[in-house]
Amino acid sequence: MAYNEQDHLLVIFPHPDDEAFSSAGTIIEHAENRGPVTYACLTLGEMGRNMGRPVFTNREQLATIRKRELIAASEKMKISDLQMWGLRDKTVEFEDEAMLAERIGQLITKTQPTRVISFYPGYAVHPDHEATARAVVRALRAIDESQRPEFLAVAFANNTRDELGEGTFIHDVSAYTDQKIEALQAHASQTGGLMKVISEDSNIRDLLVKERYYHYPL
Amino acid sequence: MQALDLTAVQDYIDKHANTPLYVHVETTNGAYATHQDPTFHSAGMFFRNAEITYERGLITGNGPYRIGLKLAHGWLYGEGLTDYEFAGDQLLIAGHDIEGRLAIAFELSPTPFAQGAEEVE
Image (cartoon, chains in turn brown, blue):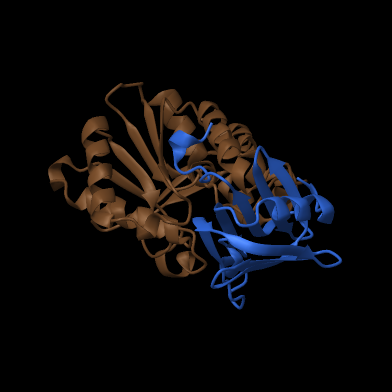
């Protein structure tokens, strides 16, 4: 597939590292071979519990640390347009969903993406993920079907495989595993001890070679 | 941060008695506690940039430590505190579990704590 400025990937997640865990391979593949990538990251993940291993930051510095990590990880993933919306971590579900959906709709209008990646409502685990997913779905539904970008939905609740299956679109990202690990490691405050986790957690090992997206009915 | 020093923290508490301060207080089990263990009941809260004035306060215990600030109409209390740091004129206290993850934050500042991506360096 040839690089085309019009083939735009729009990624929308609430926390720095959501994009790397779920989609680094797909993002890099797109950025290298298909077209530009915009990432709207709604919070700075500043309410995270991990302060590095060993601890190297604190609640107040974490925002700065994660912002820098997000910028570094985005460079690793060749994201051309990184937007930090500055909502507070943990509070996305308490914002006005209609306004959030409208803002997402404006971003879609501006970037004209061919594909949108975000979470799958009901299977996204964290309340911020669910709220983001609902707002993305609401924004996409407001677009005429003929104009609507493809939606790749990330699901990782414990009941995902049982209820939704293995994935509608399973991207083989084994060619990008090393780059994905580099992107994850850029989120250092959250991924300390990553190599140990990879050795112990088969779900993470799977994520390094396969990125699974589900079709969500719009 | 460094291991909590009772004298240094008490000194800050005493110096700031009877003056308006902003607080950030928080407890957390982490956002994925129940995802990782469905039997775990995750509970937590945070309160950012509440304004308080206390008439007296004490940090105490043998570690992990407890803090109590006596307000005009009540108390602000925290436990499980292990580490502290001064950041300019802010006092940042935290409690970390054995793996270094934040369990509680208890922070005082004469000016509001930062909010939003623009205020973050």
